[in-house]
Length: 369
Image 1 (cartoon, one colour):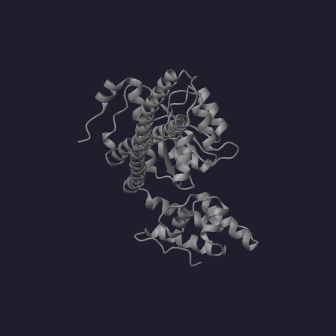
Image 2: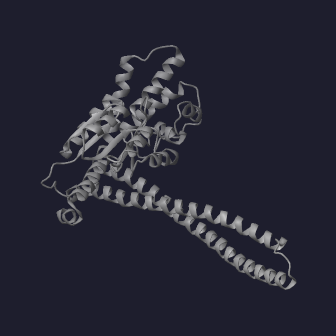
Image 3: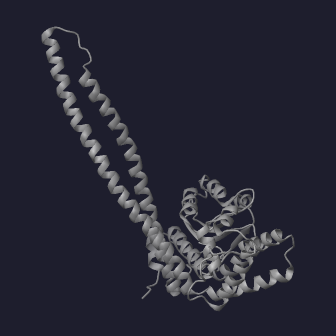
């Protein structure tokens, strides 16, 4: 399979061992990376990075490769093979989990958000110039129309004729109407560009707080003398729920864990005071996008931030759909424990600041210096 990229540079021994094992499995499928990714509706670039070791694949991706290979060969996946690969995966995961790795993840998200902000600003400038040009043309047309209509009226009054439409006037009115339609369209597009820029700027601010939480954990404010808000975790895989519970239990918050979108909606009815929702994107029956849309339609829950947990790779298509559904953040599977804790800690901090008021919240934050 000449399409496979070389193994990534500076891989840990554990990540290299896992990548080599996955490459051997994948080569047995006798299919291109692009075709296999399309078959499973995955991003080919992300899948390629799984195979060259620069990104750790979720366990379900690995099981998918093993299952597909067994089906291709007309065999079954043996428990011994599963345990061997699971051991490699666990070792690679442990070796890649560190504050430095979490910083790299969040910094990449910050770079992506900054790119969206700058691109939206440039588009806003272009649209603003185009809008101003159309408005000036309409103003000039209005002056010409006013002058022509006044001249025609005066001429007809002198001649004692009834007023009638003039071809030149009708043409100018038509041009004006077209320009007004363009002004409406450009105004809507300009507003959308501004909203996209503002949302990206808000993500940049949020991600910078998360970086500070990873780099300087002691800078997070101590828990105020109030009950801590809850965290809702939604994932249909029991192993993922157990893993997230183990990572987040150090934050001294009540974790409400459910295994489906419908159970998440029920939990939000029976519990209150959630600081954040961590939700798997790919779930049966009701996926994360649909669940988030239902949550955002409820006045009681629409302001609770949602972090999408995805095995599909954080690419522009998926993030755009997630932000449209109401997500405010993303993290890829297998999730980095340091990054996940930092994200939840920052959303909890923001929730507490809103609950106790800006003045008290600011006063309770210790200096990071």
